[in-house]
Structures are given as structure tokens and as C-alpha cells.
Image 1 (spheres, protein in one colour):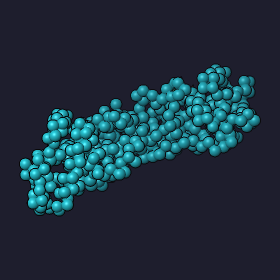
Image 2 (cartoon, protein in one colour):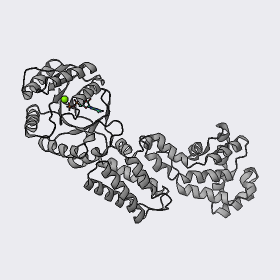
Image 3 (spheres, helix red, strand yellow):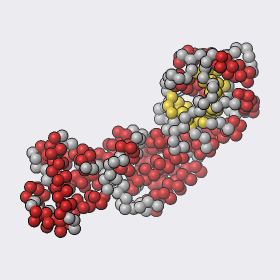
Image 4 (cartoon, helix red, strand yellow):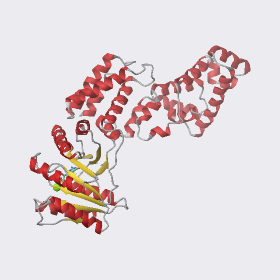
Length: 437
Ligand code: GDP
Ligand code: MG
């Protein structure tokens, strides 16, 4: 699948110390192939990888982030951007707000109408009305009634009336009279785009001027989805896309292609047949999904891989015995550095950005600390208590720092020792927290 392929693509970069034209080109070729395999239009995939390439080559190679991680981040950021950046809600400013569903037969319009009604109803301030405008099949009207019953939302239908324009108008009047502030109009679709369907939906659209016209599309239809989206958009200039059947391991490629071809936001996704299988579309989550790094857990695991478990256990023992010295401290610093830039890595976790505002671990700070420790004798490192005034002077001179800086490190080290004992070890993660002080 796509995630595996991307994984192997980034693997190419592992072990390389910096981003070069060659390793970028190599890995992006894989990324492009993976995107095309996931049904992303070739041209879009190519444009996409070109953009990422430009960004990657412009990056400072001295960055603490490893090239592989940096590429993952760049690809993710760019994918997110491509799918719309921020999540966009639906316009509910009308009174009532009229929402028109459009799309092919079987795309999931009726199901989504029910899901959306349920979603809005749960917001308490909304009282939706579902409207059955698929007048050609009695079964279709019945299906909406079943759905309405499931979610406890009233359904307006007019059996025998074959004019969907008239039904929609009547339904809106009915909604006004009965205090419904949202009207969701479910329409008929056909198996393929044809003129009769296009005329009908355009007529309804024209007559009722909905606040939101949503194009519902089955995400499993791949390239066809793009062409259908294009045709509907030309006729309706719709406001948003609903991607259905994104459950299981459905490829996410359609999201990328549709967004870049019609340039309309994807607003919701359907993730199952049940009425609660609806989610707001978040571009960054979708990017995670496509890249296969959606859950925070796997990200954290990745970071933790960098810790040597054995080392951590030893450390724990030392702390318990009060034998934690500057050599261990240095060791821990190196472990932290191995993880790359924590900030960038954490930045990939949704919502972590804010948390990190006041956490700043910069490389220069590390360098000073390292220099000081390197200027200590082995005895001083394992037994910091022996560091007196004259030793401090020597250390400061040797490390190109000042006595104040040496003092500061010793103070921090002392505090840390106390805190570490208190929480009985726990390795570098907890240490990071203390370092910021
Ligand atoms: P319509 O013809 O556009 O109104 O499509 P329907 O709402 O009748 O849906 C067609 C089929 O797709 C039905 O069997 C639905 O249960 C199914 N379906 C709709 N949305 C989803 C979804 O998000 N996931 C899955 N797995 N099935 C869905
Ligand atoms: Mg239907």
C-alpha cells in the first residue's frame, strides 16, 4: 500500500547525513509512483513532487532534523496544503439553511443526508428537515424515510409528485412554517453523468439557491471521481465535496485529485454505512492517513526507537543508587540530539504546536553544555561535588565559557539529580522537561 511504499521511499534517505539532489530525486520518484498507485492523477503527482523537491533542496542541511524526517515533514505539509490546509465548515447562515446534495447514483447521497442531519441535530441548536427529491424510484423515498427514522429527523416527501423543483420549494416553505432551520435536499442520481440528470439538478439549484451545494463522491471510484467532480462543478459551481466510503483501507488518492482539479474544499468524509460514520475532513489528518503516519502513537514510537533501551535501564539503576554523573548526563544529551529536532518532530503531532511554544531546545545550548562537561576530569564528572572555585575557573577556561555558565550547569545538574531521584528515572523523555528550566 501507499504507506509502505512511502516508507521504502524514505528509507532511501536513511543514513544520509544531508539532503542532496540525488537522494531527494530518488525518494521523490518513489513518492510519485506511490501517489499514482493510489489513484492520484499523474500530472498532479508530478507537480506535487516537484514542489516538495524545491522545498527540500532549499532546506539548510545543517538542520538537526534527519533528512528522512525532514522529507516526511515536507511531503506531509505539502499534501496538507494540496488538500486545502484548514478544515472548512458548512455554511449554516440561512434561515432556513438549505443544503443540496448532488452526485451519481450510489455515491452515498441518501446515506450522507441522514448522517449530516444527525450530525447537525446533535448540535442542539439545529432542527433539520430531510427532503426526498429522488422521485423516480419509490424505494428511494422509502430509503430516506428509514434513514430519517434512524436518526430521529423528520422527512418531507410528496409521493406522486414528479417535479423535484416543486417538491424542494414546498419543502422549504414547510420548513419555515414548522421551525426547521436546516433543510437537506436529497436528489436523484444516475449511474453515469448524463444531460437529463444535469439539467434536473441545475434546475433545482437555480430555483432554491441553496446556501450549500455539496457534491457527494465515492472515494473508491478513483480517476472517474475526478471527471465526475469536474462535470458537476462546471454545472453547479458547488461549494464542497463529500468523500464517502473512506472506511477500511480505501485509498485516499481521490481526495488529492479532486481538490486539485475542482479547487473546492472537501468538507466531510463518510467512513461507514452507519449513521454516525461521518467525520469533518481535516486535510492534515488525511495527509497522515495517506502517508500512513496518522496516529500519534506510531510517531512517538518512532522517536523512542532512538533511545537505547538497555542504556535507559542502566541509567535507572544509577539514579536509584545516586550514581548519576556528568558522563551519564552527556550520554543523555546525545540521545536527545539523536532524535533530531524535537520541535519539528512534535510539530507533526496534531495539536502539539501550542504545547511546544515555551519549550525550546536549541543546539547551541547543547554545545556549551557539552564543552563544559568535556573540560571536566573523569573524577569531576562522576563526583561533581569536588568541583571547587579553582576547578570551576579551569573548566570555564578550557571550555571557552564563563564561571557563571559552569555554575549554572552545576546548579541545573543538581536540581535534575533531585528530580530524577524523585521520579525514579524514566530516561530522556522526562529529562527533556527539566532541561527547559
Ligand atoms: P445514493 O444513491 O447516492 O443515495 O447512495 P446511497 O446513500 O443509497 O448509498 C449507496 C450505498 O453505499 C449504500 O449501500 C450505502 O450503505 C453505502 N454507503 C454510503 N456511504 C458509505 C460509507 O461511507 N461507507 C460505506 N462502507 N458504505 C457507504
Ligand atoms: Mg439516494
